[in-house]
Amino acid sequence: MSVLKRLSGMRPFQVAVGVAGAEYLRLVWKTNRVAIEPADIYERIVGDLPLIIAMWHGQHFLMPFVKRDEHRAKVLISRHRDGQINAIAAERLGVGTIRGSGDHGAAFARKGGVAAFKTMVAELEQGYSLALTADVPKVSRVAGLGIVMLARTSGRPILPVAVATSRRIEFNSWDRGVLNLPFGRSAIVAGDPIRVPAVDGSELERYRKDVEDAVNAVTRRAYDIVDRRSRTGDA
Image (cartoon, rainbow, N blue to C red):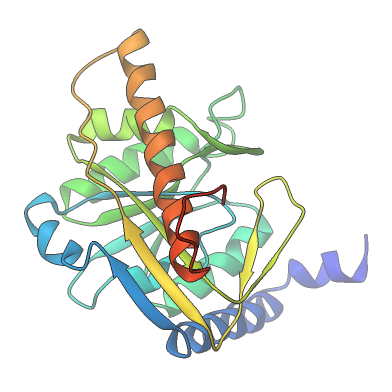
């Protein structure tokens, strides 16, 4: 076992990295000039709270700053040791955590997926909005059925959201992850709420595709804004 792997399993190390990560993200947010589209999104969503916030994995680090002080929100985070660091950072930034997996295969129950799903439904009933990465695990920009099933079961709408910064480091990873950098421009872009009725089969697949298309659209738009592109391109 490597030294880094041993360290990552130690609570003091996890706390130190989680706190440092949270404070770095706070610096990034405070030093970027933010644009919000639509400008009145917070007024628009009041009647739809609590919401299920859909985003892409790898583009999620600044999502805690989408939440306003009056909002009650939680995020689903993996039970993996790396997830513990992410949970510490999220909680320091004022977002509660639910531990579990979004996996849809045979590992769903083993990774705490069933328990996490039930917990998320209960938290929505208690008035907490939930932030979830919509991707199928290890498959970039392809939405899974999990978030759609959560919307159907809970009756709460899905809000596609993206946050981007003009200064960033882009990684060649499966999730096309980004490290946001300070002293630039940032954008929060939200789409229209997606409501999932009590449907099954091919109808459920249609709503899954709606979520995928909507999160892709807001992600492209967020990058267009921060990169000052006049036309929409791939993000």
